[in-house]
Image 1 (cartoon, one colour):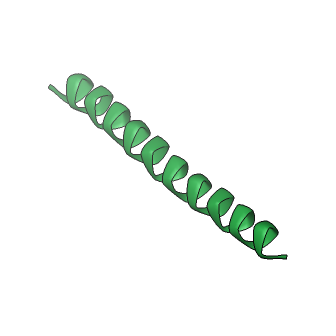
Image 2: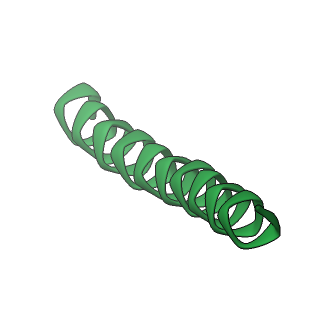
Length: 39
């Protein structure tokens, strides 16, 4: 039971961290694109 809980917890943590990194990359990419087109 504990193993499943830990695994589930780790998976959730990985998903959150991965999503955060992906969000930052997308935000930076969009920011650069808008900045270039704006200027």
